[in-house]
Length: 540
Image (cartoon, rainbow, N blue to C red; front, side, top):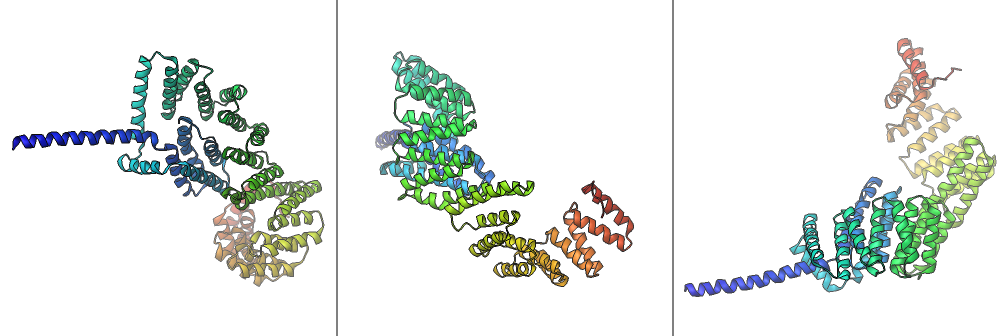
């Protein structure tokens, strides 16, 4: 009996050892098969879906470093994926609008989809098994890399063959890069280069070395190294990547025009439909749009990219998301000279603004806000007919847009067309029943017409929908005062001052009201406050 039990234990140990060995082999092998870059990308993309603020977007950018490091330390860089991931990271780093965040999300999603399609079905099974047996944790990855470092260091200490040594130093440098020990990585990349400067592995080491310097902000060193790579490299993927990286460094240094020139050269000299070519074209368009503010060139670049990708998701995305961003940025190029013209009374600036708005309307004929801008420019150029025409057209295009309506009311008021101002304000309120600015404008127009009771009702409605709207309280107080409702007027002025103690008109009006009802000490304090707010104020 005892003998049988011992035989059973012996066989069990044998089977267990076999299974354990197989499992260790499987899991160890799996660490090479699992696409960690892809997993990191999926993780980053899941985080991107929950972005709510610009600050959130900028915090996400460093997460993409893990994917980029996985890319450059892998056996072979995917040029298109690598360039797109960097594009997404750059967008998130410098993003100023929600539309830019959406651009980064789209770029990442496209990389994930493409990489998943390229990945064999059986590797997906291994990925799933890996997640079951070895949940991906930073601690496990760290330990695994450290073990590999010790093993390769041991091999280097015993190896005599230069080619094998070069390969081991390169691998060691890649592992140190994964550990973010960039100084040790640099030392080992240089050792790899020294063991065979003319080899393909030395080229990869130079590329990684330059990229590490770029990532750490050593832009001058990085630019010099990429420039040397471009001059000496063969015309292959690494050469194209080096050119793009050189341009990226120029962009980071603020030399946007040189960067764009290189982007365009890469696109024109390569195959238009490739992933990297489209990624670089996107970079060029983005730089034209947000760095150089050359909106015509941005539109031209994205139009070409849209044409090349018309049957793909990229083409649809450019049409539906990127082009509206081009229009929005272009529109800023209209409103900036418009504001400058108003500040300096410059007819030249008004005409510059009109020219820019016309370009936008050519791109997007129904862009109501460009008609708003043109209306203001013509108003200030003393061409009221054109001002009314364009302002009315904007309202017809966007009947429930408060800005378009406010602009038309403003022009009516400037031209003395108060009945029309009242009519337009009431129309907006019908469109948007809780429109604070609609009620406020209605109240203002009623004041001008002398209908103070109507104005009181309108300002009251504005306050109902925005209890912190200080100008409405002040104007309500003024109307009540004119109607001899002193208590109601003072109450409104006090509320305005309570919300904003430095709102000049309300402070002044409350001081006058206090003085009128005999509250002289309170009035004196407020008159003193008036002079604090506007030291050069002189009572008329």
